[in-house]
Length: 294
Image (cartoon, one colour):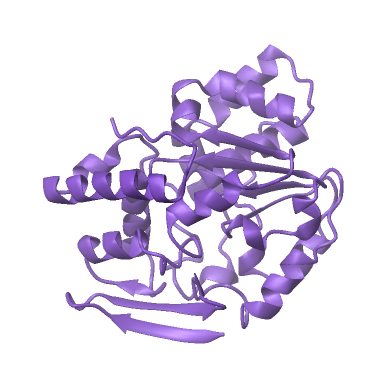
């Protein structure tokens, strides 16, 4: 593993871990290599569910929906255990049925899941909204490996040295699209926003859960962004895991939760550059997904 520190021409500063050519956020446990090996060798169970989502794409929204469906309750379930940020024993010691998460590229996920054991669920979001959400979260945290302006982060985010997803968003999506097993369900952030009830029904069906419409409607109500944000503030306990980068040990997970917020941050020139870059990269990586910016 290599520790990397860079400063660009605008004096933006980056620091991250690099392992076998892949960038990783510094919060990944240990020397990366040993931890990735532990993740890949995780003994999975047939009723495991992994929430595998690119950062700032709706991880907590999806996780709390899945947990309500799996438990048959409307309780707020907080933050998923993300495998890369804590010892894998956290997952080993969870009671079944286990629901846990990761922001890692799919090539680093447990090998047994790659072979079809358990289920994997993801949610995809417009990368322009993602990068704005990443930027605001960084501004609200302590030192998490980037210090600088939005312009610098934008360029870094779309490069293969973007440490938030072990490479660019495009490379992350390519890994997900090449997932060979049929145990993966992909929903879109836009789809969930525009058709929440239908998306919740799709999730329940994939999870092989038989809930009536009354309960599914109640889930729809309880995973509204405003409610999740309020519950995060009032019900999430402080964590020693994040006390070095937060004021109170609570990560600032929820901000706006809307579609198209990039318009409040991007300049016209940045938006045009980004649109051209996205089209070029989607073609280069031969991605199947369609991305809308309106």
